[in-house]
Length: 341
Image 1 (tube, rainbow, N blue to C red):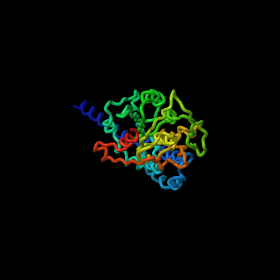
Image 2 (cartoon, rainbow, N blue to C red):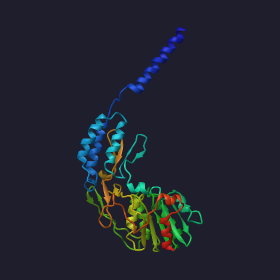
Image 3 (cartoon, helix red, strand yellow):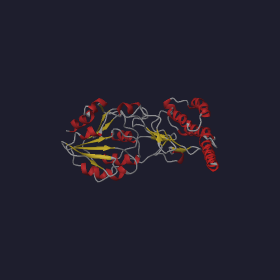
Image 4 (cartoon, rainbow, N blue to C red):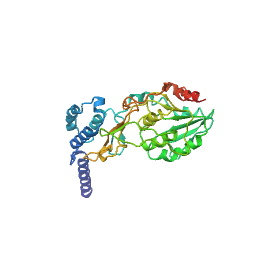
């Protein structure tokens, strides 16, 4: 009995010690204030839209400093989230400890249009199944009346550089082409170039791109590939078209055979990947190892106006709602089809 009592007391002691270790013992170090200072200074040094967005970053420091002082443990993430949200920028994000990207801000036009499109409704307009590329980022096919269709699901990695030539080869004899860039965000300017240069018959300047406040010189676009697609093209956009999707739209709008249909894009052309210096890299590691990412430059429209916040407007506005999709109609796609018949 005494032996059992001794073992019970030993186990109870271990359990008590373990609970104190897990729940009571304070953290050995706290880098919340160091992280806050580093994040604020990084953004202060590189963020390009303070004046355009009328953001007083100094006053924001004063507001958030006491919140950081009061934060305990992972409460700092809530403060960091709110701090980054002050930029109202769809390219700003932070990583959680689990590695996920958290975006504190989405444009209002995205929320308006995020359910105003459905790939399942689009497929109803085809009498044959669409093709899906190996990367699963592009869906394409031919509509009745010999109208080509390409849905671009993203501009990341090298997917479009590798896959777009074969897609366009398949569709080269169509009498018109629909490029669907609704519901897109992010990606590489190299993939943008891989798409837009296939529709050019002569060189074209890039829209102005600024990095850390300086205008960057980028070589002209040059036509690429064995042929240029010169038949009529309709580009479909909406409020969820974002970032590289907006850049693609803005460039294609300059071509004589292209018409943009739908609704104004989300408004996010901050950049970091197109900038040459190491300081202009978007991602930035804080003292604790947490990662934040902010634009360090931006693209303008060809008219010299900001696309950030303002978006790229269509040539022909065709509004579409979630109710249209629920009823099984894609009015923007229908308009494009009728244009190309």
